[in-house]
Image (cartoon, rainbow, N blue to C red; front, side, top):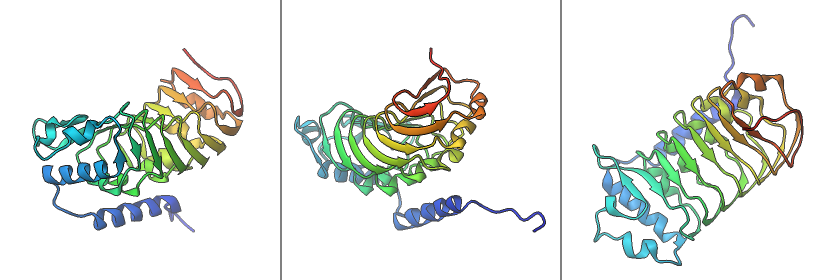
Length: 239
């Protein structure tokens, strides 16, 4: 076949998905777009402490809303921290309109359901922390669409199935990966060991199996590797 090169099918699928989602949500984005997205999120959650009900109001500047941080230059929402607020409900697709978001923290709530595919629009994300919730389903392969991502935590949820094979090809800057205490199965994708910036990995408390490959040696910056309570053979490294 000569020098013909083939693009992996999953890569093509991700590119097509990105195009479709971006096209379907194509709007002029500004602070009003961000406000509408957060109002939609508020409408989909139960807020027993009334933290959002009393503060996320048009009577207040969105940049003063609890858990919201805006950039100093363009005054767009760049960080959303809803951790430890006892919130429950689903994450609506509108969150994909927060196109300047770099930091997303929903840790320690009771969000449930599957993650909306519109998150794929948030290319600027560097930090995603969704641990200690009740999200379920398979880990979406589009998590590999965040080239700036440094921190990803999905621990203590109800994710099932195998870790997507090609997910790590699009995460060259990933430093921290926490997927512990879900119901993940299968082998650790070999692509994980190409994320050479990784320093901390926790896959403990799943149903993973297999043997640690020699490619583990690629992770020269690795400080912690937690694999206990799986069916994985090989030595782990921790500090």
